[in-house]
Image (cartoon, helix red, strand yellow):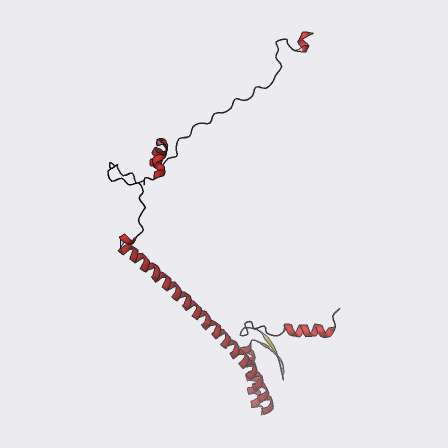
Amino acid sequence: MRSSKSRSRAKNNRNRPSGGNVVNRVFDSSGPEGKVRGTPQQIIDKYNQLARDAQLSNDRVAAENFQQHAEHYLRLLSEAQREIEARREEQERQNRERQAERDRERAERQEREAARQADPADAPQPDVMGFDPQAPVQPESGLVETPESQTADPAATEAKERKEKPARRPRTRKPKAAAEQPADDGDTPEAAE
């Protein structure tokens, strides 16, 4: 079982700001006039109003106290806004770097594409094997003849040229084994009786 001291210490740790969004966070401020609740800007406005009221009633000590409370929340708010601004600038810097990298990559791709289109001799050429200049010229079918296709059977080559699958032979089925049934020819022991 925990003691009440450890429980209260843990509770106090939970109320501390965790570095989240301080600008919109709601605070409870215990000032000289009681609690003031709100965002840092609302608390600053409230303490400034209380300081003006104290000044109008000629209470310089209370006015100074309220101004110090307002100044505390003003510092807290300005620090949070500075952090937000620093994060925003860092994000913008990273975005600019990423965009510059994308632009460089795009420019490199365009240069490579332009170089390839400018000089077709530099473009990769297909490898022609088994070319015989004395062979008769055949009509162009759009297909490249390879050594493998020259040794294949003619039916498969014709099918490739027609871009069809080669014809399949129909499967032959094995005959079903005849069920062994007793013959009625009288050779069975029952018929002999």
